[in-house]
Figure 1: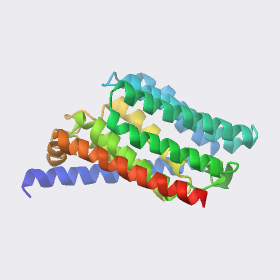
Figure 2: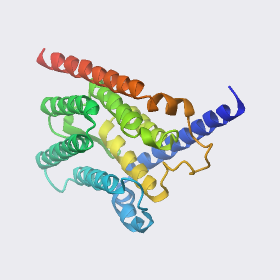
Figure 3: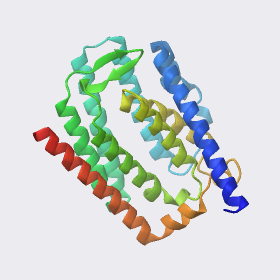
Figure 4: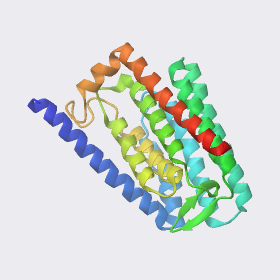
Length: 267
């Protein structure tokens, strides 16, 4: 490994570590109190909205950010007990329907048909999780057990494969810069360590998404042209045959896991 490659690896590792520490701290801060959760997940994006730049596909990112802010608002409502849990569950169902439908619609518009199977599998897995669940529970310390049941490992695996496909295939045009990929890896790592997977994932992802709008992290020049990049991944994903194979492998993993989840549910 030459000096340039080592620098790429070290800066990527440093950025990932900093993102994980930051995301972990942000999540813990959101759990510390309802007031703090309101301030950092709802008020802060509004106060600093003038910092948002017109980055590439900023409209799409802003729609996702608004939707995820809605999820954060539902979580805060659940913690306050202002409305009964049945209504909270209904709001969560509406969120997941809009989120899944939005991703599928965007992929159809982009003609990203190789990504559709994994999105459909993710939608089916979330539906099964909802059907098998009960009523959303408060775990204490600001944590939520959405639909009263832990997210099954199959759903987590499907989500991981789906996210990998989206970031490395649909967004391969931002390569060799790895900043967006590393930001999502940090957020997902925090979520996998948490009891409330989707709560932790969306709380951290929405905030990091907001920061990406403010600082345009995907620019090759951000942090320097040698900061957090991988030419090897870039070369691989620019090869259309490898990119298509990667999509098919991710879709196959999603299909196997959703079939396994269905079989367990039926038994």
